[in-house]
Image 1 (cartoon, rainbow, N blue to C red):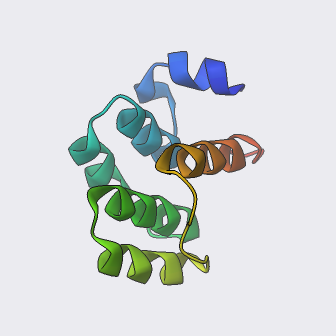
Image 2 (image 1 turned 90 degrees about the vertical axis):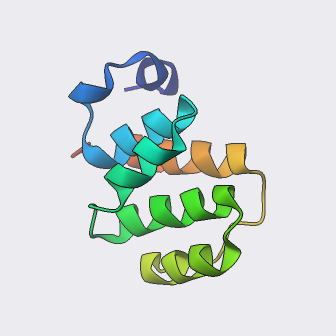
Length: 94
């Protein structure tokens, strides 16, 4: 799936990590966060970290970056969103 196809996808056809990011891309932080809270792996922690960073809660974001095994992002939110999406789309299981 390409990034353009992802953006045009029906979110109900996406696995939870991408579905959370899809909703965030639509401006629905709450729905994205609700989904991310239930993803209990490194991907979910990365998404959760990004969402808390976006919210402005850097302390909570730091916790989730550590759980994800990642350094806190320093670039723009848009860049990080794209990086997470591209990483997930490159995985064969997504």
